[in-house]
Length: 376
Ligand SMILES: [Zn+2]
Ligand SMILES: [Zn+2]
Ligand SMILES: [Zn+2]
Image 1 (cartoon, rainbow, N blue to C red):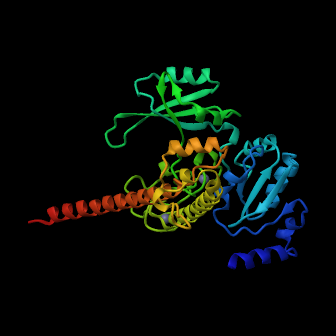
Image 2: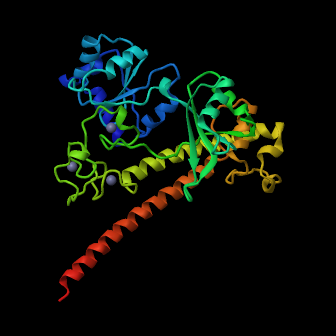
């Protein structure tokens, strides 16, 4: 609630000279409470709009001067978000480019996201033998009008052996989704599945904040180890550093520690949102599915129940993917969403425990060394 009152105060505080910009009719102020709103922007932004730019600004005047006078950009909207941040949305890609090409000295501390038109379309092909050359896969797909830019074979994380799984990256195109209809390639029976992105929060290796990556960050660097303003690799304290400090929570760990409470909070918020969307999506779809084809979506054990819960996935990714295309639904497969979030949670827990174990091992090693030294 403190955010509300603070923002309200700012809105009414127009007598203050430094706040004069708020009367500017071009500026729309919105109260955004959710810290994660920016993470979701990627999903929400319409395809034809450029990515939003999130700027750190205590005073908007220099920023608006730069955009209005120096760059002569008019097609933009500003929204105030949280923590003195403003979301800047340009209408045209040209204006977007103008802003992000502005030199850093022009006091523009911001981050943005990878432009949508640069994003490749990714799928997984299951069933192709690993020895089939990537060139052949490429040619076969190109004969079916899919412009392939990358083929990667997936190896087993346990044994390291190549699997009959390939990640295919194609250029963004209108026919991208037709790739799911392919069931034979290089005389092999295949299944095309959705590419699952790891539901992990990106963290910027430049400013150490979450939700964006360093390639799209124009903020001043923050050291991952000591939280001071310098690039991590140029830390004056060197490798053996006494005062490890997290710039996000000020705890005694590096900023990229997976167990950081700030990271955990963001993750929890994000996943509860995704979970909610998944559950809502599944239930919505299930109710319409019941009329069309009850047996497809409802797990057998739950068919007789009044209100089935979709906690256990009964479909493989391929099946879901096929249905996605059959019913022309573009949403991600929600019945596996729950499983995903469970796997993600487990992965996170395991990663945290690994980190803790290695920390304990370090302490033990140091202790042993001390004991050895002190022995008569
Ligand atoms: Zn950053
Ligand atoms: Zn440092
Ligand atoms: Zn932390």
